[in-house]
Amino acid sequence: MPEATIDTGNTAWLLVSTALVLLMTPGLALFYGGLNRSKGVLNMMMMSFSTIGLVSVLWLFYGFSAAFGADSAGGLFGDLGQYFGSKTYIDQFWGATAESPSGIGIPTYVFMVFQMTFAVITVALISGAISDRAKFGGWLLFAFGWATLVYFPVAHNVWGGGWIAQKLHPLDFAGGTAVHINAGAAALGVALVLGKRIGWPRESMKPHNVPFVALGAGLLWFGWFGFNAGSELTVDGVTGLAFVNTQVATAAAVLGWVIVEWIRDRKPTLVGASSGAIAGLVAITPACGFIDSWAAVLLGLVAGIVCALAVSLKYRFGFDDSLDVVGVHFVGGWIGSLWLGFFANPDLNSAITGALGAKAGLFNGGGAAQLGAQAGASAIVTVYSFVVAFVLAFIIEKTMGFRVNAEAEVEGIDIAEHAESGYDLTPASGSSGGAFAMAGIGASKTAPAPAAEAPASEKVAG
Image (cartoon, rainbow, N blue to C red):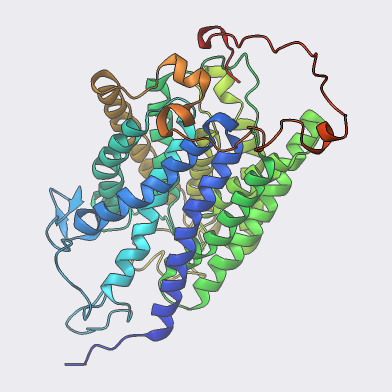
């Protein structure tokens, strides 16, 4: 029997990819935090950072088993005891068989932690839909329940050999269905339960820190190369294809979003360019290792345009998706998933017609079968995630309470939930006038005292 040996190149690449994907969640915190109003920026960022802590522990103890363990319960989730957290896998390799004990030469622990970072950011994505109004404790309970009941079994069904993979054979290279459609559908469900922010849509609720938005988008773009190219698990031609497609699709999506703003509003914005980048990254995620680069450019352009238009749907239908998780992740995920039904090319990735059991896209001679598989898998995940998220959020709201009270929302959720604020706007210590006062410049000693502050109930959110 051959001896198991580690593939140092594959393992090193996956460890680097894991670090890149982990960086995406702090990047998301900056992106969401900048898009938020200043009085809720810390709460928004805390939801992302707390998800790193919570989901990482859940993944170690049972999430990895539920997602990637042997089929259980008719393929709905994996064997919960197979990779239980108390076991060690230092000398075991992912994908190993008796004939090939090394598998792809990657230790099981390395694959486990790589997938852990996917679970973390998927849950964190949902938080953008409920900014400025969710109790932190309610969010943690929701994140625990949704990760357990939705993300872990959906990951098993899409990537772990579960029912959807066995019956429909959809393609999802790095998470269009399992991550973005999944999180986007959940975001809609929980946003409907929590309801609209006070003053929405009447009041202007613009991003408070556009440089934060651009910085967060840049970190997400950087980390996404690990997200997409790392999902090949090995270092080969498909890895390079996924890397290149990630870049060109995202670049095209930036142009697409900016073009829409330029035509519609006469003013292209940095927030729009940043959002366009995220839309392109979302759309290329399921397709990056399966399509030609020219098709990736076209996909990014379409995603940028469509998502730029889709974010306005919340005003038409009256649901307060605060930071456009539905318009970008849900819509972008669907675009990328369906794109495979048209453009999946088996000449680029033999796994399409081989190990994955999928078909070529419509424009590559495969007929409409793969388009149906993509639509079917996306629809199943959409309905399941939305229903569970809605029910879970409803139960939390009716028991411990999920939404903060009106006073906390108006005054600022950062102070109410965390006893801190993102910006200290109090005067520096010493005389209030500083050097100007010493020079005799500034407020007169006889200036009238400021009017008393209006009670919280009379303030307007903003």
